[in-house]
Image (cartoon, rainbow, N blue to C red; front, side, top):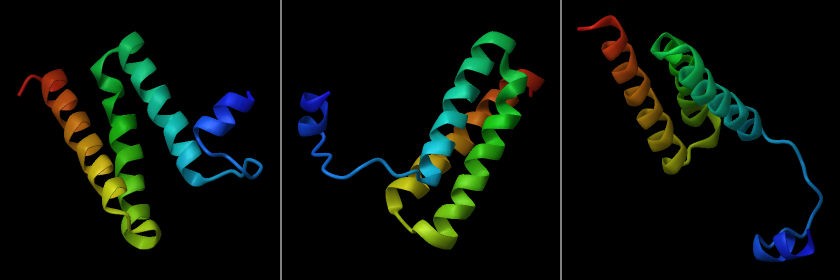
Length: 85
């Protein structure tokens, strides 16, 4: 464990961030799409939209904005595939 801490330069104890929760929800979205199909993309679209709103209102990091825009585009693509348009 010490090697991991040294590699990632972790020097302080863990503290919860909202990105941790969004990360878990995104992983759940991927697993649910794999098991239940593309209709679950609505869940991923919601996660990405909430993340984008949070990025614009508080975080204001370009990497977060781009990541959530990519998630929105991907989930919209999945929904287009699902509904056959």
